[in-house]
Length: 64
Image (cartoon, rainbow, N blue to C red; front, side, top):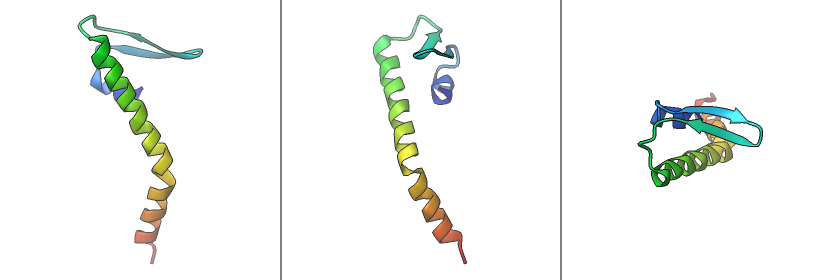
């Protein structure tokens, strides 16, 4: 949600039971907004799946 709020500062995002509600500007096209939401979700998925690998890499590089 933070990434989306940075992309769409005029929109307000709120966590609701079973999902997220979005209130905002009417100049957004559904297609563009959907694309940006899916991209943000995919980036978060990649981040979560590679976090332990990145932490191990940093630990290996910085250990003495």
